[in-house]
Length: 177
View 1 (cartoon, rainbow, N blue to C red):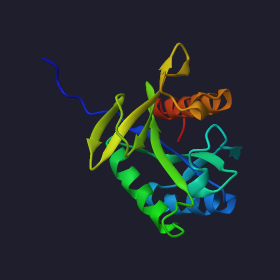
View 2 (view 1 turned 30 degrees about the vertical axis):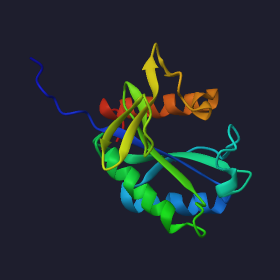
View 3 (view 1 turned 30 degrees about the horizontal axis):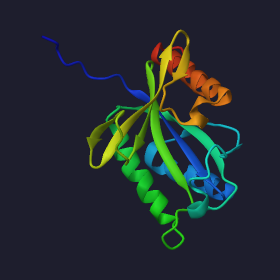
View 4 (view 1 turned 180 degrees about the vertical axis):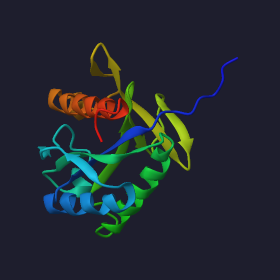
C-alpha cells in the first residue's frame, strides 16, 4: 500500500502575451498582488507561432515569461488560473481579451500549465481547471512532449526553464535565500 506524502512546493511561473507591451508590464505588477514578488522576467519575444489569438487580441503579439519568488503548493494552480482569468476579464475591450495570462509551475520533474480546456493529456483538477503536462525533465534538461506548444519547445524558452529549475533546486537545497 502506498502512503500519501505531501507534494513539495513548486516554482510558480506565468506567460503573459498581448499586442500591448505596456499592458504586459502593468499586468506583471498586478499579478504580484496575488502571487508575490516577481523574481525573474524574460526578455520580450514575439508570439508568432500561431495566429489563433490575432482576431481577438490584435497583431503582432508579444510575450514575456515570469516567475515568482514564493514557492507554492502544486494545488495552488487551480486558484492561480481562476485569479488570472479574473485579471484577464478586468482588461477586456468589449468581449475581446487584451491579454492572455497562463500560470503554471516548475517542479524538479516537470513544467505544468493551467488551462480551462480539456484534452486527452490534461488532468482535471477542479473548478473547471485542468493541468497540462507541458515539459518533462529528463537527462539534464526539460524535454517537450508530442502536444507541447511550439513556443514552449523553443530552445531559448527551454534554456530559460532549465535556468529557473536550477535556481529552484538551489533554493530547495538551501543554497539560495
